[in-house]
Image 1 (cartoon, rainbow, N blue to C red):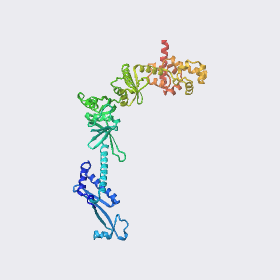
Image 2 (tube, rainbow, N blue to C red):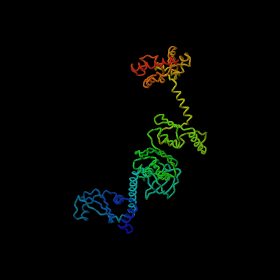
Image 3 (tube, rainbow, N blue to C red):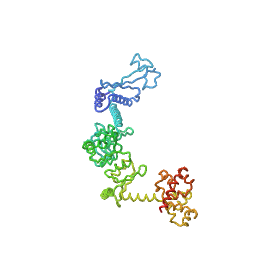
Image 4 (cartoon, one colour):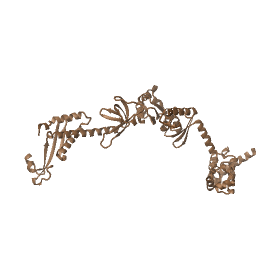
Length: 510
């Protein structure tokens, strides 16, 4: 072999040591990488890597490569890659026997330039794999942490940050629109996710817009939160503009809002500075939905919050606050050139309202005071109207015919002619007359709810059973009343006594 194809052992070892010094890799892992890289080169050179063993001693600078041969009779030689005939083995070791193994030491100095190049490539590839695995293993367990990093580059992909040799990316969706990022500037960011696909480099995604960034900042600045005395119950955020955070204290002696603000506002100001003057509303969490929604609507001051169902509520603002909200939204609408048509107020376009809905988890309906009063009066009128299904003594079949004919409200039966009702419902004139008498009794007589001497439990049972007025009740059969109300004979006797006495008293007064 020519001299220029040889490489002194110290040259290889020194090159490997230099590589180790430039990489943050454990020495044991590095030793394994070096040995594995040599095996890869041997595979390309000899095609049978299974028969080779490589040991690398970094302290001594020794690299030893062994090749094992199985000694066989000359006549039984089958595989020249792994077997050595006895005649040749005896030349190398006079004491060798058939069935034994001969260990050949390979001189790696004579690999040649191509083999050395392959060695370097294999070494770099395996080191890169270890580095990628190390980065992934370290940061996948640090999701949710805040770190300090330097901006290395800003491009279309996002903001590229560095800590030593580790790269992080903050995509546009994780940035705050109002912030500007410059090469060389230092940032605090949240480790949001670590993604690795196949054998690609792990991608460490960081964020400054995620609500959990706010959570972690409060944990850093407010010891009571990190110690578990104060809990962050919910966070809603429009990055760069406004954040609402609901807090609750596990110790009644500690004010959660005051603790988050700090003496003279020092704690909250540190967070506000980090967020480039983003507004932060800290509110007391409440398990009472109405109270919590009112606080979440701050700085607005709702007059009324009415829970209308599971996860839904109506928020009533006074005329002045409602008008200001509409005016603000209209001014923003007028400055935008990408919107055509007439302005239509949409509460969801109001940031405070939207954040209140997000932090409470309720679907909110916003109304002004006058609209609320009008709706309330309308609802009260509907509730006062007698529905045909509530009229005592009308069975389901008859009620169904009346509803199909358009007589959902009983009062309409008093307005239309008998012939019209018969035509629409198919009921006879006699049936219609009986129904009309029952309906008329409801409007002409005293309501059950107005009888002061009648206990509430009896009132509820009678009204639920369809008996809304005294005349209705007194004109019905006892068996029918018992069936519809569930009252026993003794209770019915007491109810009849009270209502009869009240009815007589009213007649005497008239």
